[in-house]
Image 1 (spheres, rainbow, N blue to C red):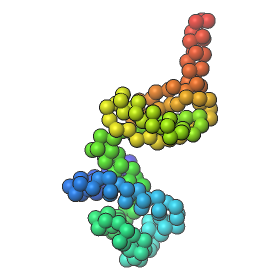
Image 2: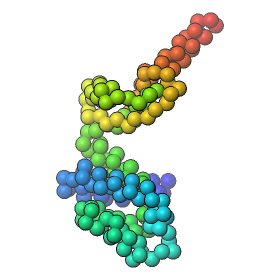
Image 3: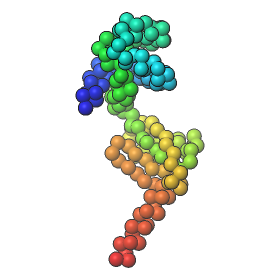
Image 4: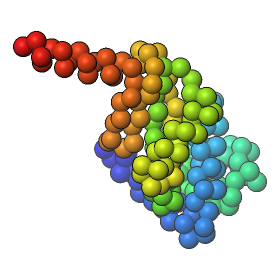
Length: 181
């Protein structure tokens, strides 16, 4: 619980700076690339979160990795995380930042699960239909689950729309059970 609160505190800080500068999307992309880059090398995260390694050594690594690659504020934000021994929160901070940024820009994230990979045309139709229904811009996070048989399950926040074949079969099964009782 404390880590979630700390992640919110730090993500709010960088979010406010990004909002003041009109760089919500740019800072979000930078934080995402930092996270993905570091997560692809687990030793880097272990190094940056190890309390036995000196702060200066950690900052030297960050300088080699990111100086000149990131905006000044995002780079200094990473240095602050090292100073405050909060670098382990980088994933949660990026998640919180993305949520704040999406809300500020009127973007909804829809988790779409299909039985097989959705084509670009299918993704476009889903995105357009959801935008029409919600009145907001929609970004898709795609998932696959062969157990759905066909169709799709869409989750936006705590709303769930089940348009899958498996979901329809389950509904029919329940209706038949009720009628036979």
